[in-house]
Image (cartoon, rainbow, N blue to C red):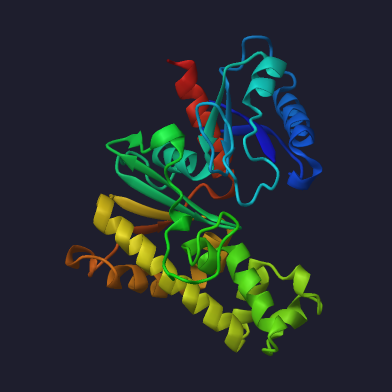
Length: 307
């Protein structure tokens, strides 16, 4: 969990952070998050803060802040922290899907500045997306749009934590490649991934797989190639559907893990796209890095304060 005071120019101040620890319980997480917000706003005179914006993984009803079986936030189903935040800080509070507010932030302050048709895909522990059409976010019913990580690319494959069998998140997210590596190791396949995790399969994360791939490990390279192929299917389909000005890839895996394979990812997307994209896909790396969620949360807070 991270909090910051952000001014209208997108400058971040007074950052604070803490581990989420979702298994400690929703109520504990909510209280800890409220305290982070207080830390970030310390020293600001009364009336100096426009509103509170919260960027969170979903699925989540962005109007009420109620979570609906979030696959990476165990025990948070049908719960919301929005009322406690608003009451504790006595400020207007708005909730946003993490990838959707990232798209807003990149269009306002980042690589998509000035663009109105934007697709942002975050590839991290999970995979999510945000879509802007004519400058407006695509929210869907209850604000649940953008779960492109659960588009199925391998019917009959392994199910994700949300129950989608063979979806993009299972194959291409950091959590997905780590879980697949564990299963293959348990089946007896040899790999340097285990060595890099200190011999403990439970310590394998997405970064471990990409580190092994850089060393030429066969299993790791296979997992990376499978991830790129799956991303090509989904992102190529999104280009065909929405015809955006830019397709932004962010998240820890998207920026760090896939950067050495950028040309291959671009080719995979183009191979799944219409002819207009075959020469060049409008692919870009997110510019705002780890701060994109904070800046996106600030953007929707400023917008809420002005309505």
